[in-house]
Image 1 (cartoon, rainbow, N blue to C red):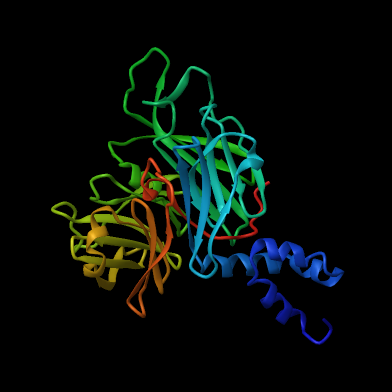
Image 2: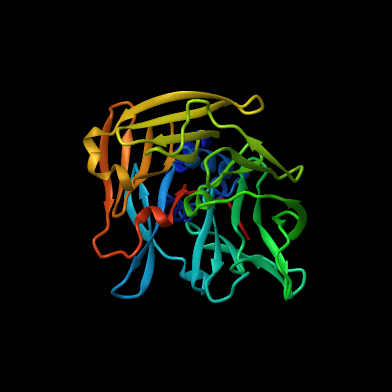
Amino acid sequence: MGFFPDEVILQILARLPVKSLFKTKTVCKLWYRLASDKYFVRLYNELSAKNPMVLVEIYDSTESKSSLICVDNLRGVSEFSLDFLKDRVKVRASCNGLLCCSSIPDKGVYYVCNPMTREFKLLPNSRERPVTRFYPDGEATLVGLACDLSRNKFNVVLAGYHRTFGHRPDGTFICLIFDSDSNKWRKFVSFREDHFTHMNKNQVVFVNGALHWLTGSCSYILALDLDYEVWRKISLPDAVSYGSGNRVYLLESNGRLSLIQISDAWMKIWVMKDYERELWHMVDSVSLRCIRGLVPGIFPITQTGEYVFLATHKQVLVYHQRSRVWKEMYSVKNSATLPLWFSAHAFCSTIFPCD
């Protein structure tokens, strides 16, 4: 151990899976100190963020239970559980290794957890009064999670139409923001007429200190600045068209907003080069002829500058941009009742604390 400088050991440890990393901490006091250092935690998280994965909830109709799988381009497929929460939950949002989950039996109960370290935080009650609730089904229309690695904090956003018990909804759009530093919720009110599909609600992107959703009509991106608590509309690239066989998805690519448009024969990828000026640049155009039979049910989930993860009804695929090669990473073995893309989230393995 004495033959290697601390920095070399740091670089080696920073490339280990979380479980293996925790085992190395018991080797000696030196390694325990290195792996517990704030600089190392930041280094580990930054490297892990460059290796995005796909997290999918698989529902087994024969046993009436669900499980979580993680599809990693480097290490393959692994399975893990959220049983440490001791609650039946569904994953509502994912960001930089943390998950925001809502309780299934108890509406309005939310957790933020790190499934790799099995740490979690039960968020305080977000309701101001028991007579107010989100409309129409008692849950927020939009759920967003912003995990800021540079500031070592996270925010949870619940946004939707509120109504007072016994009254009709009046179009008021309530936004609740939980701040991990203060351990409190704060609220502001606006009036919106934006609509979202299931996929639009699931694919929320955190970049530039804001959470971003693509509206259901795919006419613009709706962004919430977490520091200034203001909503902003961001235009799409002029060449993007929705409808007539075209589908549009919002993703993140190396810290930038990205759009992927899928048609019957092509997948086109744009990246926002200038956030303030809203300047987009098309970085790739991919022929879909070799997977033509899968195109109607294919959805991009996450990407880097080197590969794109996509989910179909029963498969998770990866497309390598340099080699132009498609590869199947995972295939459902049982009769899942829901397509994989319905419950797929971008994910990365970090040691970000959430307690």
